[in-house]
Length: 621
Image 1 (cartoon, rainbow, N blue to C red):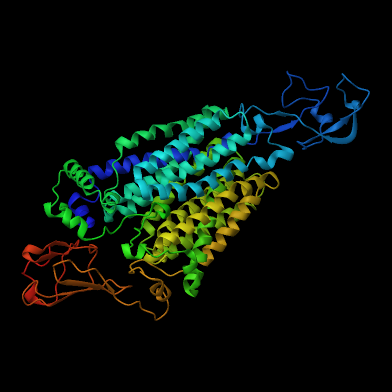
Image 2: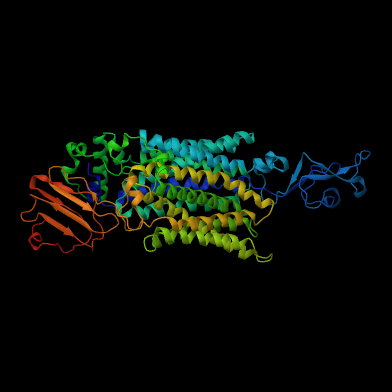
Protein backbone atom coordinates (compact mmCIF):
# COMPACT_ATOMS: atom_id res chain seq x y z
CA UNK A 1 0.00 0.00 0.00
CA UNK A 2 1.30 3.44 -0.93
CA UNK A 3 0.39 4.95 2.40
CA UNK A 4 2.05 8.28 1.69
CA UNK A 5 -0.37 8.63 -1.19
CA UNK A 6 -3.28 7.90 1.12
CA UNK A 7 -1.83 10.33 3.65
CA UNK A 8 -1.68 13.08 1.03
CA UNK A 9 -5.32 12.47 0.17
CA UNK A 10 -6.43 12.49 3.81
CA UNK A 11 -4.46 15.61 4.68
CA UNK A 12 -1.29 15.75 6.72
CA UNK A 13 -2.80 17.28 9.85
CA UNK A 14 -6.57 17.44 9.49
CA UNK A 15 -9.23 17.33 12.17
CA UNK A 16 -8.93 13.58 12.73
CA UNK A 17 -5.13 13.72 13.04
CA UNK A 18 -5.49 16.57 15.54
CA UNK A 19 -7.92 14.41 17.52
CA UNK A 20 -5.40 11.55 17.67
CA UNK A 21 -2.59 13.98 18.50
CA UNK A 22 -4.68 15.42 21.35
CA UNK A 23 -5.24 11.97 22.85
CA UNK A 24 -1.53 11.26 22.50
CA UNK A 25 -0.73 14.48 24.37
CA UNK A 26 -2.74 13.18 27.34
CA UNK A 27 -0.62 10.03 27.08
CA UNK A 28 2.40 12.28 27.65
CA UNK A 29 0.85 14.44 30.37
CA UNK A 30 0.13 11.68 32.91
CA UNK A 31 3.58 9.99 32.81
CA UNK A 32 5.11 13.47 33.19
CA UNK A 33 3.25 13.86 36.48
CA UNK A 34 4.53 10.53 37.77
CA UNK A 35 8.18 10.66 36.66
CA UNK A 36 9.05 13.57 38.99
CA UNK A 37 6.66 12.77 41.83
CA UNK A 38 9.46 11.15 43.86
CA UNK A 39 10.91 14.64 44.32
CA UNK A 40 8.06 15.41 46.75
CA UNK A 41 6.97 11.90 47.69
CA UNK A 42 10.49 11.12 48.90
CA UNK A 43 11.49 14.63 49.97
CA UNK A 44 14.22 14.71 52.60
CA UNK A 45 12.80 16.91 55.35
CA UNK A 46 14.86 18.22 58.23
CA UNK A 47 15.18 15.73 61.09
CA UNK A 48 17.02 15.04 64.33
CA UNK A 49 17.42 12.19 66.76
CA UNK A 50 14.90 11.49 69.48
CA UNK A 51 16.52 12.54 72.78
CA UNK A 52 15.81 10.14 75.68
CA UNK A 53 14.23 11.79 78.73
CA UNK A 54 13.57 14.96 76.72
CA UNK A 55 11.31 14.01 73.84
CA UNK A 56 7.73 12.87 74.29
CA UNK A 57 4.59 12.88 72.17
CA UNK A 58 4.17 16.63 72.56
CA UNK A 59 7.65 17.78 71.47
CA UNK A 60 8.48 19.14 68.01
CA UNK A 61 11.50 19.30 65.75
CA UNK A 62 12.65 22.62 67.24
CA UNK A 63 13.13 22.39 70.99
CA UNK A 64 15.51 24.22 73.37
CA UNK A 65 17.09 21.02 74.69
CA UNK A 66 18.51 20.20 71.23
CA UNK A 67 21.21 22.82 71.92
CA UNK A 68 22.87 20.64 74.56
CA UNK A 69 21.50 17.17 73.82
CA UNK A 70 22.50 16.91 70.13
CA UNK A 71 25.85 17.73 68.47
CA UNK A 72 25.51 20.82 66.31
CA UNK A 73 24.48 19.98 62.73
CA UNK A 74 24.37 16.23 63.43
CA UNK A 75 21.16 14.48 62.39
CA UNK A 76 22.22 10.95 63.29
CA UNK A 77 23.73 11.16 66.80
CA UNK A 78 22.94 12.39 70.32
CA UNK A 79 25.14 13.06 73.32
CA UNK A 80 25.26 10.02 75.58
CA UNK A 81 22.88 10.17 78.57
CA UNK A 82 24.31 9.46 81.99
CA UNK A 83 23.24 6.02 83.22
CA UNK A 84 21.97 7.13 86.63
CA UNK A 85 19.56 9.62 85.14
CA UNK A 86 16.15 8.31 84.19
CA UNK A 87 13.67 11.15 84.04
CA UNK A 88 15.45 14.51 83.83
CA UNK A 89 16.40 16.65 80.80
CA UNK A 90 19.15 19.07 81.82
CA UNK A 91 22.47 20.09 80.20
CA UNK A 92 24.61 18.34 82.85
CA UNK A 93 22.83 15.02 82.28
CA UNK A 94 24.82 14.18 79.11
CA UNK A 95 28.38 12.95 78.52
CA UNK A 96 30.60 14.52 75.88
CA UNK A 97 30.44 11.35 73.76
CA UNK A 98 27.99 10.56 70.97
CA UNK A 99 25.72 7.62 70.36
CA UNK A 100 23.75 6.60 67.29
CA UNK A 101 20.00 6.87 67.42
CA UNK A 102 17.25 4.63 66.12
CA UNK A 103 14.34 7.09 66.23
CA UNK A 104 13.96 10.53 64.73
CA UNK A 105 11.84 13.64 65.01
CA UNK A 106 10.95 15.25 61.67
CA UNK A 107 10.18 18.82 60.73
CA UNK A 108 6.60 18.66 59.47
CA UNK A 109 6.27 22.37 58.71
CA UNK A 110 6.70 21.75 54.95
CA UNK A 111 5.37 18.21 54.45
CA UNK A 112 3.10 16.31 56.79
CA UNK A 113 4.53 12.97 55.68
CA UNK A 114 6.97 11.63 53.05
CA UNK A 115 8.47 8.22 52.47
CA UNK A 116 11.51 9.44 54.40
CA UNK A 117 9.50 10.27 57.51
CA UNK A 118 7.28 7.21 57.35
CA UNK A 119 9.97 4.61 56.67
CA UNK A 120 12.86 6.41 58.46
CA UNK A 121 15.06 6.65 55.35
CA UNK A 122 17.80 8.53 57.16
CA UNK A 123 21.36 8.00 58.35
CA UNK A 124 22.29 4.34 57.69
CA UNK A 125 19.18 3.86 55.54
CA UNK A 126 19.57 7.11 53.57
CA UNK A 127 20.89 5.21 50.54
CA UNK A 128 17.44 3.66 50.09
CA UNK A 129 15.82 7.02 49.33
CA UNK A 130 17.24 7.60 45.79
CA UNK A 131 16.68 3.92 45.02
CA UNK A 132 13.01 4.67 44.31
CA UNK A 133 13.93 7.00 41.45
CA UNK A 134 16.52 4.58 40.11
CA UNK A 135 14.06 1.67 40.08
CA UNK A 136 11.56 3.85 38.25
CA UNK A 137 14.19 4.46 35.57
CA UNK A 138 15.01 0.75 35.49
CA UNK A 139 11.33 0.10 34.90
CA UNK A 140 11.42 2.60 32.03
CA UNK A 141 14.29 0.65 30.49
CA UNK A 142 12.46 -2.67 30.70
CA UNK A 143 9.08 -1.19 29.79
CA UNK A 144 10.42 0.46 26.67
CA UNK A 145 11.61 -2.92 25.41
CA UNK A 146 8.78 -5.20 26.58
CA UNK A 147 5.80 -2.93 25.95
CA UNK A 148 7.35 -1.70 22.72
CA UNK A 149 7.61 -5.26 21.47
CA UNK A 150 4.05 -5.94 22.65
CA UNK A 151 2.79 -2.94 20.66
CA UNK A 152 4.71 -4.08 17.57
CA UNK A 153 3.27 -7.59 17.82
CA UNK A 154 -0.29 -7.07 19.03
CA UNK A 155 -1.13 -3.49 18.20
CA UNK A 156 -0.65 0.03 19.48
CA UNK A 157 -3.87 0.15 21.47
CA UNK A 158 -2.97 -3.00 23.40
CA UNK A 159 0.37 -1.38 24.20
CA UNK A 160 -1.45 1.66 25.59
CA UNK A 161 -3.80 -0.58 27.59
CA UNK A 162 -0.93 -2.49 29.19
CA UNK A 163 0.95 0.75 29.95
CA UNK A 164 -2.09 2.41 31.53
CA UNK A 165 -2.72 -0.60 33.77
CA UNK A 166 0.89 -0.77 34.94
CA UNK A 167 1.08 2.95 35.60
CA UNK A 168 -2.34 3.36 37.20
CA UNK A 169 -2.61 0.16 39.23
CA UNK A 170 1.07 0.24 40.22
CA UNK A 171 0.73 3.84 41.36
CA UNK A 172 -2.35 3.12 43.45
CA UNK A 173 -0.71 0.12 45.14
CA UNK A 174 2.41 2.16 45.93
CA UNK A 175 0.19 4.84 47.52
CA UNK A 176 -1.20 2.32 50.03
CA UNK A 177 2.01 0.34 50.43
CA UNK A 178 2.67 -0.69 54.04
CA UNK A 179 6.33 -1.39 53.32
CA UNK A 180 9.03 0.57 51.51
CA UNK A 181 10.21 -2.46 49.56
CA UNK A 182 6.74 -3.00 48.13
CA UNK A 183 6.78 0.66 47.12
CA UNK A 184 10.13 0.11 45.35
CA UNK A 185 8.66 -2.81 43.42
CA UNK A 186 5.68 -0.70 42.38
CA UNK A 187 8.03 2.08 41.25
CA UNK A 188 9.55 -0.39 38.83
CA UNK A 189 6.16 -1.24 37.36
CA UNK A 190 4.99 2.38 37.18
CA UNK A 191 8.24 3.24 35.39
CA UNK A 192 7.60 0.50 32.85
CA UNK A 193 4.04 1.72 32.33
CA UNK A 194 5.03 5.37 32.07
CA UNK A 195 7.72 4.73 29.46
CA UNK A 196 5.46 2.41 27.48
CA UNK A 197 2.64 4.96 27.49
CA UNK A 198 4.91 7.72 26.17
CA UNK A 199 6.48 5.57 23.46
CA UNK A 200 3.28 3.99 22.13
CA UNK A 201 1.32 7.28 22.27
CA UNK A 202 4.08 8.97 20.33
CA UNK A 203 4.32 6.25 17.69
CA UNK A 204 0.58 5.99 17.22
CA UNK A 205 0.19 9.73 16.73
CA UNK A 206 3.12 10.05 14.30
CA UNK A 207 1.82 7.15 12.20
CA UNK A 208 -1.36 9.16 11.58
CA UNK A 209 0.35 12.51 10.93
CA UNK A 210 1.64 13.44 7.47
CA UNK A 211 5.33 13.92 6.81
CA UNK A 212 5.06 17.72 6.68
CA UNK A 213 3.97 17.91 10.31
CA UNK A 214 6.00 15.07 11.85
CA UNK A 215 8.93 17.15 13.05
CA UNK A 216 6.63 19.82 14.47
CA UNK A 217 4.48 17.28 16.31
CA UNK A 218 7.46 15.13 17.29
CA UNK A 219 9.02 18.04 19.17
CA UNK A 220 5.92 19.77 20.52
CA UNK A 221 4.29 16.58 21.81
CA UNK A 222 6.86 16.83 24.60
CA UNK A 223 5.22 20.04 25.88
CA UNK A 224 2.40 18.13 27.66
CA UNK A 225 5.08 16.04 29.37
CA UNK A 226 6.64 19.23 30.79
CA UNK A 227 3.20 20.50 31.79
CA UNK A 228 2.58 17.21 33.61
CA UNK A 229 5.84 17.62 35.51
CA UNK A 230 4.92 21.18 36.50
CA UNK A 231 1.43 20.04 37.52
CA UNK A 232 2.99 17.73 40.09
CA UNK A 233 4.64 20.77 41.69
CA UNK A 234 1.31 22.60 41.78
CA UNK A 235 -0.44 19.60 43.36
CA UNK A 236 2.34 19.29 45.95
CA UNK A 237 1.56 22.81 47.17
CA UNK A 238 -1.90 21.65 48.25
CA UNK A 239 -1.23 17.96 49.01
CA UNK A 240 1.50 17.60 51.64
CA UNK A 241 0.99 13.90 52.39
CA UNK A 242 2.95 11.57 50.12
CA UNK A 243 0.28 8.88 49.92
CA UNK A 244 -2.42 11.24 48.68
CA UNK A 245 -0.01 12.94 46.30
CA UNK A 246 1.09 9.60 44.87
CA UNK A 247 -2.53 8.59 44.40
CA UNK A 248 -3.42 11.87 42.72
CA UNK A 249 -0.65 11.79 40.09
CA UNK A 250 -1.06 8.15 39.07
CA UNK A 251 -4.72 7.17 39.45
CA UNK A 252 -5.77 9.18 36.32
CA UNK A 253 -3.77 6.71 34.23
CA UNK A 254 -6.52 4.16 34.75
CA UNK A 255 -8.83 6.42 32.75
CA UNK A 256 -6.61 5.82 29.70
CA UNK A 257 -8.10 2.34 29.47
CA UNK A 258 -10.86 4.18 27.60
CA UNK A 259 -8.37 4.59 24.72
CA UNK A 260 -9.32 1.05 23.79
CA UNK A 261 -12.46 2.64 22.35
CA UNK A 262 -11.41 6.29 21.84
CA UNK A 263 -8.06 5.80 20.09
CA UNK A 264 -8.00 4.21 16.62
CA UNK A 265 -5.52 1.49 15.76
CA UNK A 266 -2.60 2.45 13.54
CA UNK A 267 -3.53 2.03 9.87
CA UNK A 268 0.08 1.32 8.98
CA UNK A 269 0.28 -1.45 11.56
CA UNK A 270 -3.02 -2.98 10.39
CA UNK A 271 -1.85 -3.13 6.76
CA UNK A 272 1.46 -4.72 7.77
CA UNK A 273 -0.56 -7.35 9.65
CA UNK A 274 -2.74 -7.97 6.60
CA UNK A 275 -5.87 -6.61 8.28
CA UNK A 276 -6.81 -4.53 5.27
CA UNK A 277 -10.55 -4.39 5.91
CA UNK A 278 -10.00 -2.72 9.30
CA UNK A 279 -7.44 -0.36 7.78
CA UNK A 280 -9.85 0.72 5.03
CA UNK A 281 -12.62 1.32 7.56
CA UNK A 282 -10.40 3.67 9.58
CA UNK A 283 -9.23 5.45 6.41
CA UNK A 284 -12.83 6.03 5.40
CA UNK A 285 -13.58 7.41 8.88
CA UNK A 286 -10.63 9.79 8.66
CA UNK A 287 -11.75 10.93 5.19
CA UNK A 288 -15.26 11.59 6.48
CA UNK A 289 -14.08 13.59 9.50
CA UNK A 290 -11.58 15.55 7.40
CA UNK A 291 -14.22 16.07 4.69
CA UNK A 292 -11.98 14.73 1.91
CA UNK A 293 -12.09 11.86 -0.57
CA UNK A 294 -9.51 9.15 -1.08
CA UNK A 295 -9.06 7.83 -4.65
CA UNK A 296 -10.84 4.47 -4.78
CA UNK A 297 -7.94 2.67 -6.46
CA UNK A 298 -5.71 3.39 -3.42
CA UNK A 299 -8.07 1.32 -1.26
CA UNK A 300 -8.11 -1.75 -3.51
CA UNK A 301 -6.96 -4.89 -1.71
CA UNK A 302 -4.71 -5.75 -4.64
CA UNK A 303 -3.02 -2.39 -4.31
CA UNK A 304 -2.61 -2.91 -0.61
CA UNK A 305 -0.93 -6.26 -0.98
CA UNK A 306 1.22 -5.50 -3.99
CA UNK A 307 3.73 -3.36 -2.12
CA UNK A 308 5.04 -3.37 1.46
CA UNK A 309 4.00 -0.52 3.70
CA UNK A 310 6.85 1.94 3.91
CA UNK A 311 7.17 3.91 7.10
CA UNK A 312 5.81 1.78 9.93
CA UNK A 313 7.44 2.81 13.18
CA UNK A 314 9.17 0.41 15.51
CA UNK A 315 7.89 1.24 18.98
CA UNK A 316 10.93 -0.14 20.75
CA UNK A 317 13.08 2.59 19.21
CA UNK A 318 10.57 5.32 18.46
CA UNK A 319 11.86 8.65 17.24
CA UNK A 320 10.81 11.34 14.81
CA UNK A 321 12.21 9.38 11.87
CA UNK A 322 10.45 6.35 10.43
CA UNK A 323 12.11 2.98 10.64
CA UNK A 324 12.12 1.98 7.02
CA UNK A 325 12.90 -1.71 6.48
CA UNK A 326 11.84 -4.07 3.73
CA UNK A 327 10.59 -7.54 4.52
CA UNK A 328 13.80 -9.06 3.21
CA UNK A 329 15.91 -6.90 5.52
CA UNK A 330 13.74 -7.85 8.49
CA UNK A 331 14.74 -11.48 8.10
CA UNK A 332 18.37 -10.64 8.91
CA UNK A 333 19.09 -10.16 12.59
CA UNK A 334 20.61 -6.74 13.19
CA UNK A 335 22.64 -6.10 16.34
CA UNK A 336 24.56 -3.18 17.77
CA UNK A 337 27.73 -5.27 17.45
CA UNK A 338 27.48 -4.90 13.67
CA UNK A 339 27.55 -1.11 14.01
CA UNK A 340 30.53 -1.17 16.36
CA UNK A 341 32.59 -3.31 13.98
CA UNK A 342 33.04 -0.49 11.47
CA UNK A 343 35.56 2.22 12.49
CA UNK A 344 33.63 5.39 11.57
CA UNK A 345 30.26 4.23 12.87
CA UNK A 346 31.91 2.86 16.01
CA UNK A 347 33.11 6.34 16.97
CA UNK A 348 29.85 8.03 16.00
CA UNK A 349 27.73 5.44 17.80
CA UNK A 350 29.70 5.69 21.05
CA UNK A 351 29.49 9.46 20.77
CA UNK A 352 25.73 9.31 20.36
CA UNK A 353 25.35 6.75 23.18
CA UNK A 354 27.23 9.11 25.49
CA UNK A 355 25.08 12.07 24.43
CA UNK A 356 21.89 10.19 25.33
CA UNK A 357 23.42 9.09 28.64
CA UNK A 358 24.33 12.68 29.54
CA UNK A 359 20.96 14.06 28.42
CA UNK A 360 19.03 11.71 30.68
CA UNK A 361 21.42 12.00 33.63
CA UNK A 362 21.44 15.81 33.61
CA UNK A 363 17.75 16.19 32.70
CA UNK A 364 16.42 14.06 35.56
CA UNK A 365 19.23 15.12 37.86
CA UNK A 366 18.40 18.82 37.53
CA UNK A 367 14.73 18.00 38.06
CA UNK A 368 15.51 16.20 41.32
CA UNK A 369 18.03 18.84 42.41
CA UNK A 370 15.55 21.71 41.95
CA UNK A 371 14.17 21.28 45.49
CA UNK A 372 17.70 21.59 46.92
CA UNK A 373 18.05 25.14 45.58
CA UNK A 374 17.55 28.10 47.90
CA UNK A 375 14.16 29.76 47.95
CA UNK A 376 10.66 28.36 47.64
CA UNK A 377 11.04 24.72 46.57
CA UNK A 378 7.65 24.68 44.83
CA UNK A 379 8.39 27.76 42.72
CA UNK A 380 11.86 26.45 41.86
CA UNK A 381 10.49 23.08 40.87
CA UNK A 382 7.64 24.43 38.72
CA UNK A 383 9.96 26.88 36.97
CA UNK A 384 12.48 24.09 36.30
CA UNK A 385 9.77 22.06 34.59
CA UNK A 386 8.18 24.90 32.61
CA UNK A 387 11.51 26.11 31.22
CA UNK A 388 11.41 23.04 28.98
CA UNK A 389 8.60 24.55 26.89
CA UNK A 390 10.63 27.49 25.52
CA UNK A 391 13.51 25.09 24.95
CA UNK A 392 11.30 22.97 22.66
CA UNK A 393 10.15 26.06 20.75
CA UNK A 394 13.77 27.19 20.43
CA UNK A 395 14.74 23.75 19.14
CA UNK A 396 12.02 23.74 16.51
CA UNK A 397 13.21 27.04 15.03
CA UNK A 398 16.98 26.44 15.09
CA UNK A 399 17.40 22.75 14.35
CA UNK A 400 17.06 23.17 10.57
CA UNK A 401 18.58 26.64 10.38
CA UNK A 402 21.75 26.02 12.38
CA UNK A 403 21.91 22.30 11.68
CA UNK A 404 21.81 19.33 14.02
CA UNK A 405 25.48 19.43 15.00
CA UNK A 406 25.75 23.15 15.76
CA UNK A 407 22.41 23.21 17.59
CA UNK A 408 23.23 20.20 19.78
CA UNK A 409 26.75 21.38 20.60
CA UNK A 410 25.49 24.86 21.48
CA UNK A 411 22.77 23.75 23.90
CA UNK A 412 25.11 21.23 25.56
CA UNK A 413 27.74 23.92 26.10
CA UNK A 414 25.11 26.42 27.24
CA UNK A 415 23.73 24.04 29.84
CA UNK A 416 27.19 22.93 30.95
CA UNK A 417 28.57 26.43 31.49
CA UNK A 418 25.41 27.47 33.36
CA UNK A 419 25.61 24.51 35.75
CA UNK A 420 29.33 24.96 36.46
CA UNK A 421 29.11 28.70 37.03
CA UNK A 422 26.18 28.22 39.41
CA UNK A 423 28.41 26.03 41.59
CA UNK A 424 30.82 28.93 42.23
CA UNK A 425 28.31 31.69 42.97
CA UNK A 426 29.09 33.28 46.37
CA UNK A 427 26.56 32.92 49.17
CA UNK A 428 23.92 35.60 49.22
CA UNK A 429 23.24 35.38 45.48
CA UNK A 430 20.76 32.53 45.66
CA UNK A 431 18.55 34.00 42.94
CA UNK A 432 21.48 33.83 40.50
CA UNK A 433 22.02 30.13 41.30
CA UNK A 434 18.37 29.45 40.53
CA UNK A 435 18.53 31.38 37.24
CA UNK A 436 21.66 29.53 36.11
CA UNK A 437 20.11 26.19 37.08
CA UNK A 438 17.09 27.05 34.93
CA UNK A 439 19.40 27.95 32.06
CA UNK A 440 21.08 24.58 32.47
CA UNK A 441 17.70 22.82 32.32
CA UNK A 442 16.82 24.86 29.21
CA UNK A 443 19.98 23.63 27.48
CA UNK A 444 19.67 19.98 28.40
CA UNK A 445 15.95 19.86 27.51
CA UNK A 446 16.75 21.24 24.06
CA UNK A 447 19.58 18.71 23.73
CA UNK A 448 17.22 15.85 24.58
CA UNK A 449 14.81 16.98 21.86
CA UNK A 450 17.61 17.25 19.30
CA UNK A 451 19.26 13.87 19.95
CA UNK A 452 15.98 12.10 19.19
CA UNK A 453 16.09 13.50 15.67
CA UNK A 454 19.86 13.48 15.21
CA UNK A 455 20.39 9.86 16.22
CA UNK A 456 17.75 8.65 13.77
CA UNK A 457 19.67 10.40 10.99
CA UNK A 458 23.12 9.22 12.06
CA UNK A 459 22.32 5.52 11.93
CA UNK A 460 21.69 3.90 8.53
CA UNK A 461 18.21 2.70 7.67
CA UNK A 462 19.03 -0.99 8.08
CA UNK A 463 20.36 -0.36 11.62
CA UNK A 464 18.25 2.61 12.68
CA UNK A 465 15.98 0.60 14.94
CA UNK A 466 18.76 -1.15 16.84
CA UNK A 467 20.87 2.02 16.95
CA UNK A 468 18.21 4.27 18.45
CA UNK A 469 17.11 1.44 20.73
CA UNK A 470 20.62 1.20 22.18
CA UNK A 471 20.69 4.98 22.59
CA UNK A 472 17.49 4.74 24.60
CA UNK A 473 19.03 2.09 26.85
CA UNK A 474 22.01 4.38 27.50
CA UNK A 475 19.59 7.16 28.41
CA UNK A 476 17.88 4.91 30.94
CA UNK A 477 21.28 4.13 32.49
CA UNK A 478 21.81 7.87 32.95
CA UNK A 479 18.38 8.21 34.52
CA UNK A 480 19.15 5.42 36.99
CA UNK A 481 22.21 7.31 38.22
CA UNK A 482 20.52 10.72 38.25
CA UNK A 483 18.82 10.31 41.63
CA UNK A 484 22.08 9.26 43.29
CA UNK A 485 24.00 12.17 41.78
CA UNK A 486 21.31 14.61 42.92
CA UNK A 487 21.50 13.18 46.46
CA UNK A 488 25.15 14.31 46.66
CA UNK A 489 23.77 17.75 47.50
CA UNK A 490 23.45 16.44 51.07
CA UNK A 491 27.26 16.25 51.16
CA UNK A 492 28.09 19.43 49.22
CA UNK A 493 25.21 21.41 47.75
CA UNK A 494 26.87 22.57 44.47
CA UNK A 495 28.39 19.13 43.74
CA UNK A 496 25.51 17.79 41.57
CA UNK A 497 25.50 20.95 39.44
CA UNK A 498 29.26 20.71 38.92
CA UNK A 499 28.99 17.08 37.79
CA UNK A 500 26.12 17.88 35.44
CA UNK A 501 28.03 20.83 34.01
CA UNK A 502 31.25 18.94 33.31
CA UNK A 503 29.43 16.07 31.59
CA UNK A 504 27.44 18.51 29.44
CA UNK A 505 30.61 20.34 28.37
CA UNK A 506 32.32 17.07 27.42
CA UNK A 507 29.31 15.97 25.38
CA UNK A 508 29.08 19.37 23.69
CA UNK A 509 32.72 19.16 22.61
CA UNK A 510 32.35 15.59 21.34
CA UNK A 511 29.33 16.56 19.23
CA UNK A 512 31.54 18.51 16.80
CA UNK A 513 32.97 15.20 15.57
CA UNK A 514 29.57 14.05 14.29
CA UNK A 515 28.55 14.70 10.66
CA UNK A 516 25.91 17.25 9.72
CA UNK A 517 22.72 15.66 8.38
CA UNK A 518 20.50 18.62 7.46
CA UNK A 519 19.62 18.60 3.76
CA UNK A 520 21.45 15.33 3.18
CA UNK A 521 20.09 12.07 1.84
CA UNK A 522 20.44 9.72 4.77
CA UNK A 523 22.58 6.57 4.46
CA UNK A 524 20.78 3.28 3.92
CA UNK A 525 23.59 0.80 4.66
CA UNK A 526 26.64 0.61 6.91
CA UNK A 527 28.84 1.06 3.85
CA UNK A 528 27.13 4.34 3.03
CA UNK A 529 27.37 5.41 6.67
CA UNK A 530 31.13 4.90 6.64
CA UNK A 531 31.38 7.30 3.68
CA UNK A 532 28.67 9.68 4.88
CA UNK A 533 30.13 12.98 6.02
CA UNK A 534 33.69 11.93 5.24
CA UNK A 535 35.88 14.39 3.37
CA UNK A 536 35.73 13.76 -0.35
CA UNK A 537 33.56 10.69 0.00
CA UNK A 538 30.23 10.53 -1.80
CA UNK A 539 27.74 7.71 -1.34
CA UNK A 540 26.41 6.08 -4.46
CA UNK A 541 23.19 7.55 -5.89
CA UNK A 542 20.10 6.04 -4.35
CA UNK A 543 17.61 4.31 -6.61
CA UNK A 544 14.01 4.52 -5.49
CA UNK A 545 11.63 1.59 -6.00
CA UNK A 546 10.05 1.24 -9.41
CA UNK A 547 6.34 1.91 -9.75
CA UNK A 548 4.68 -1.38 -10.69
CA UNK A 549 3.42 -1.31 -14.28
CA UNK A 550 4.61 2.27 -14.86
CA UNK A 551 8.08 2.27 -16.29
CA UNK A 552 9.78 5.00 -14.32
CA UNK A 553 12.88 5.24 -12.18
CA UNK A 554 13.87 7.98 -9.79
CA UNK A 555 17.39 8.62 -8.52
CA UNK A 556 18.69 10.95 -5.85
CA UNK A 557 22.32 11.81 -5.21
CA UNK A 558 22.81 11.52 -1.41
CA UNK A 559 23.97 14.72 0.22
CA UNK A 560 22.39 16.95 -2.45
CA UNK A 561 18.99 18.35 -3.36
CA UNK A 562 19.25 17.18 -6.99
CA UNK A 563 16.98 14.45 -8.31
CA UNK A 564 17.07 12.68 -11.64
CA UNK A 565 13.82 11.29 -12.98
CA UNK A 566 14.05 9.14 -16.06
CA UNK A 567 11.57 6.92 -17.83
CA UNK A 568 10.15 5.80 -21.14
CA UNK A 569 6.79 5.01 -22.71
CA UNK A 570 5.11 7.46 -20.38
CA UNK A 571 5.06 10.72 -22.30
CA UNK A 572 6.03 10.73 -25.94
CA UNK A 573 9.36 12.45 -26.46
CA UNK A 574 10.22 12.66 -22.78
CA UNK A 575 12.73 9.91 -22.25
CA UNK A 576 14.67 11.86 -19.65
CA UNK A 577 13.70 14.72 -17.36
CA UNK A 578 16.10 16.37 -14.95
CA UNK A 579 14.77 18.22 -11.93
CA UNK A 580 17.36 20.63 -10.53
CA UNK A 581 17.68 22.78 -7.43
CA UNK A 582 14.62 24.68 -6.29
CA UNK A 583 12.55 21.72 -5.13
CA UNK A 584 11.42 22.16 -1.54
CA UNK A 585 9.99 18.70 -1.10
CA UNK A 586 9.34 15.64 -3.19
CA UNK A 587 7.06 12.91 -1.92
CA UNK A 588 8.65 9.53 -1.20
CA UNK A 589 6.24 7.74 -3.47
CA UNK A 590 4.18 8.04 -6.65
CA UNK A 591 0.46 8.05 -7.12
CA UNK A 592 0.01 5.81 -10.08
CA UNK A 593 -2.90 5.29 -12.41
CA UNK A 594 -1.39 2.86 -14.80
CA UNK A 595 -4.49 2.46 -16.89
CA UNK A 596 -3.82 5.85 -18.42
CA UNK A 597 -0.10 5.44 -17.95
CA UNK A 598 0.26 8.56 -15.81
CA UNK A 599 2.64 8.92 -12.88
CA UNK A 600 2.27 11.94 -10.63
CA UNK A 601 5.10 13.32 -8.50
CA UNK A 602 3.82 15.65 -5.78
CA UNK A 603 5.89 18.75 -5.07
CA UNK A 604 5.20 21.89 -3.10
CA UNK A 605 6.19 24.39 -5.79
CA UNK A 606 6.33 24.36 -9.54
CA UNK A 607 9.74 24.48 -11.21
CA UNK A 608 11.14 24.66 -14.76
CA UNK A 609 11.66 21.38 -16.56
CA UNK A 610 14.63 20.67 -18.76
CA UNK A 611 13.20 19.83 -22.17
CA UNK A 612 10.41 22.05 -23.43
CA UNK A 613 8.55 19.17 -25.09
CA UNK A 614 7.64 17.82 -21.64
CA UNK A 615 6.07 20.96 -20.21
CA UNK A 616 2.53 20.50 -21.48
CA UNK A 617 2.05 16.76 -21.25
CA UNK A 618 0.52 16.75 -17.74
CA UNK A 619 3.36 14.64 -16.41
CA UNK A 620 3.62 16.75 -13.26
CA UNK A 621 1.01 18.32 -11.01
